[in-house]
Length: 130
Image 1 (cartoon, rainbow, N blue to C red):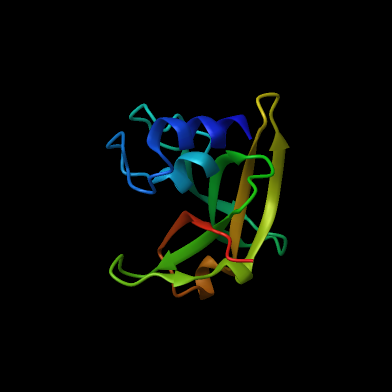
Image 2 (cartoon, helix red, strand yellow):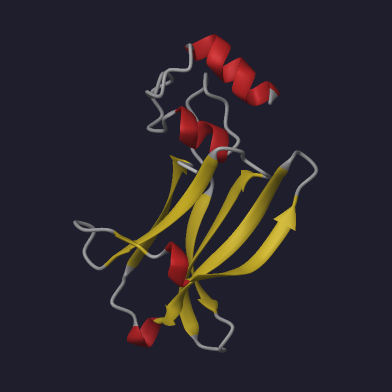
């Protein structure tokens, strides 16, 4: 709550990217970043062993634990020009809670690499409409 209040007071609740780092206020909140400092989330694509023991395209990132009103969207692409929402086809492989109120997660796409139409993966933070 203190992060959301501070961001709203400093930025007037503006959804734009006030610090020029490429993330709007929703992304700054979800990735637990400072909305007044140019910083970037730590997101890393990985080749991981999935629950089936086969190689999968994965994504490791840090997010705010219990980020209310925000949800993640995992997207994948073959050529970087068109992105598909694959959130419902992903598995959570690792989850480590940090002392600073964040967690690091490793998520993989359910399709094994050998069978997957995707070469790239990314995560977006969006306002939860529920």
